[in-house]
Image 1 (cartoon, rainbow, N blue to C red):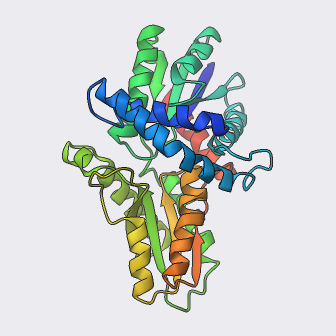
Image 2: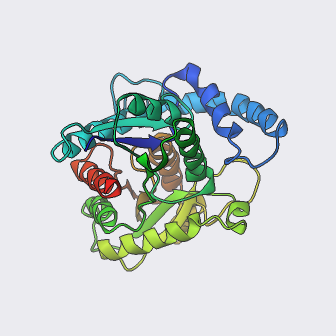
Length: 325
């Protein structure tokens, strides 16, 4: 069987010139800002224009930390590309003609264009695998909509398969636990410490409308703690944007409160980020670390994410294989 797979992520700006257009496309998405046009478009223009200068500085600060050729853009596309390459090599062991591509929600190549490429290639099945472990209307809702448009446009029917969120898959939990244990091995566990599992926040209004994201994150956290042998952890939420109410507790406030209570060792482990991006490299590694220092926390560690680890590529290949059956 000739199968193709598409690893789908958000994307990001490749250089300073791409920052404002990327932000505009992000906030223009009705799944991100649920309001009618032309109000949504106007707000997207205002937000992207206002946030672009600060975002450019943040990208510049993380430039070169993961790739010496990258000085002012997001490393997300680099890691997603490497994940695709490794996953393809593993899939080819069973399906010699297998091909794995990438697609992004807010930059090229888009989901529709990548599907079109595989349609032209004559693949028997095309498996879409979003790299978001949890479902949210703001992320997978948008991606699923793009996939369905591609299905309809190219009359794919059951040839186009969508993989379900993998937040509670035992293999995903196991390799996530390995990352957390790597960080645990770097602290003095004979002395008190706290573990903060941090996930991207979501407006409370989404939860009130029935978005399952928070419940899935909580389940993910519980399974991960059990796998890593952890009895005590705090689940917090990061990356709040704008004045509306977001799900809590916030990661920033959690770190400040831990410092006030006298905690000296803290491990922050991201949930839901499968590769490094501005929210791990800047928001956690730079901004949150500074807040931890100000709060009197002496040892602050951020657990790694998967990036191009072989274990994650193997999991993706198995997930794709199972979806193709």
